[in-house]
Image (cartoon, rainbow, N blue to C red):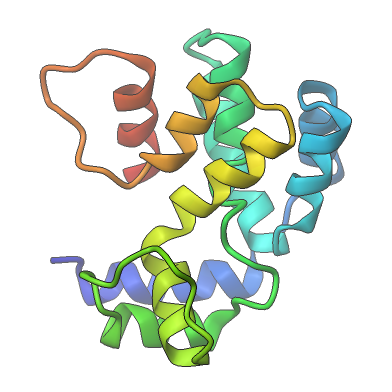
Length: 162
C-alpha cells in the first residue's frame, strides 16, 4: 500500500511540476511528428513526468523505441483527466473493471481510464507509428516487474516506480 505522504507529494507535484522548454525540445528530437502530437496532447504534469523518467532511462542507453515509449508511457490519460478524477480513482477506483467496451457513464469511464491508461496509450502510440516493442512498454508500464527480468521493460518499470 502506498504511503499517504507519497500521495500528498503526488498531488503537490501534479499541481506544481511542468516540463521545461528543454524537456519539450528533447522530446521533439526523439519522437516522430505523430508521436510528438500525442506527447503534446498530454497534461503538462504528465509531460513533465514522462520526460523526467525518459531522461533517466536514456542514461542507460536503451534502444530508440524504448525511449520513445518512455516519453509516451502516460499518453493514455486524457487531457481532461485532472486532479479530482485522479484522487477519486485512487480512493474509489475499481481495479477489476474491464478495459472494453468503454463505458458511457463518466464514473465508470474514469475508472477504466485510471486502470487501463497503459493499454489505451499503447493503442494510440501504435496508430501514431511507434513500434510494437515501444507500445508494449506503454501497455505494461504498471504491471508488476519480474525481479529476475533485466529487460528494458523491467528496467523502465523500476524507474517509473521510484
